[in-house]
Image 1 (cartoon, rainbow, N blue to C red):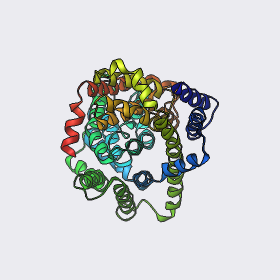
Image 2 (image 1 turned 135 degrees about the vertical axis):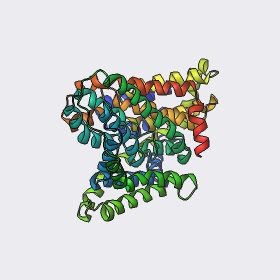
Image 3 (image 1 turned 90 degrees about the horizontal axis):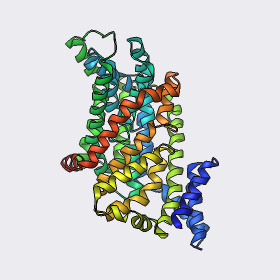
Image 4 (image 1 turned 135 degrees about the horizontal axis):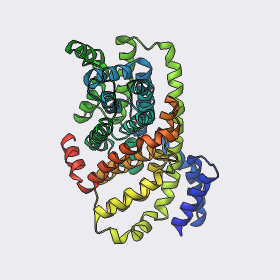
Length: 425
């Protein structure tokens, strides 16, 4: 009965247009009335405690770093370097998208921001050399969702807070799966692009390649600084966010000189708006999470999934399919905040490593960003490139399938996540 009440209130509130944060609070209130323990003070305390987290301070700083990089020319130089490196290969602009997406993912942690930057810069160029516009947009959207997996990933930070998991371990565990997503996109793009008649740009000279590398060197150093700093315990993930923001500001203003202090206020405002939305979601989710624990909702889910508990692989496959279906209708961040307190105790009971589950969980939620009808990243790319959403959906299927195959492989072979995570950590 508790599961029915929780789902009915959540889905009903969303159906009538209630914002997700308030829908989560309503779920908590409904469970309180069901258990005959309504107390407004509990709601207030959990709202405050939900946002009162040192780890969550990383979110605004990484968002700020991403905004500064886009405005200050760091993102543009990464694309230029990728162009010089692989642009001359047949279908080379597609490989530029994938390589730039992987590098940008290690800088911003935001799928929408990366996809918007790549879409605006590269889709017009891809269409000009003969690529189909819908397929080009599909590749950009699929490349954008690498950002939630490779550190510094904002969804991994939120997962760590919601599930009380080590964010540093989640970061290290996401490196190889994120790279495998990029490799899968390369294979899918090769299969698609080899049939097209294209204008291939000439190979850049070694001098031009070195010039592009040294011009983008300071931007490329940021992920190195973050990973090395976390690896050797120089700073925590939250402190890494501060380092990233300060470093991006220094490079954009002092070295590249494309960012002016007069632009800082607008960047702060944009970052504050996004951060406030995320923080309200996190605060609302803790109200629901507290009541989920009190009502023993995970225990009821364990009973429902009892036939699968003896086989971790089958349980993971069932969870993957469940989240994939839910992800078509709900955005990534609400999914993480709603389902983490429900599913994490279940997979822990089944003997599945919670860090491994967390990475797979974020990856399958990231796929929801490029699956219709919601598909936030699909809509961002369509808007930036002035392409119809139908054309983008038609073009994304080969790349969506490639990334889903990677997730299935990681479920079948958990060592692909656990071994590199242990080595990095």
